[in-house]
Amino acid sequence: MTAKPTALAGRPKSKKKRAQILESAAEMFLAHGYERTSMDAVAKHSGVSKQTVYSHFKNKEALYSAVIEQKCISYQLQESSVYKDDMSLEEILAGFARKFIQLLTDQHVISMYNVVIGEAQQNLQIAELFHDAGPVHSIGLIQQLLKTHPSSLLNDEDAYAAAVDFFNLLKGDYHMRSLLHLPCEIEQGAIDKLSARTAKTVMMIITDAQQDM
Image (cartoon, rainbow, N blue to C red):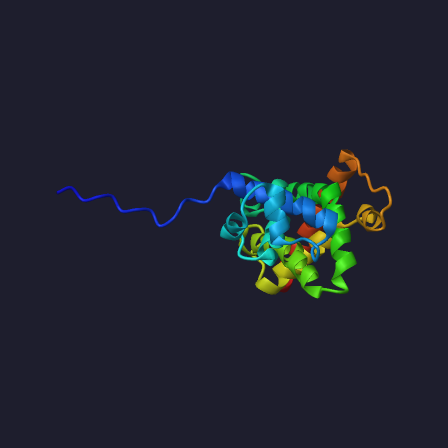
């Protein structure tokens, strides 16, 4: 007899439904804050069952982190956008810098910052989740780049310090204004100049670190 095909352990998760859930969750976290957004409410808002939400995200913390990570991905702030063999290290840094500034001036991101700042005093876990999924992740990408790129090859400590400097240099007055709910528009020409200047400065930091190695 011909053996019957083995049944699949479960239905494959739908990428479309995952995107649906993330979009709804982002809207609800911004509108109601972290504490007042429930998994039940996200399920209802996204038009899927609660079971479907939990099949993609094991809890609200994981969902919240995924929302932040998805926003970074939408601006190509992930590993695949950093490691490019056909570009110099300075060009890679300048390109990443432009995307990062555009992320920081995204109105949804500004709103998320304000939500986190507003709720962190009552719940530090929210701040930790945001910090880990956003800043820590981005610093880690640049740190790894500076450790492995042939033009750099810094040790772990120096690479981390240079990565932190890189992001701090990119947070100009526009970022402070955004946190204070003041107009914070920045023209593309200004973004390009700040990105190029930051990349050049970090290359100088790398040179100094290499001389001390």
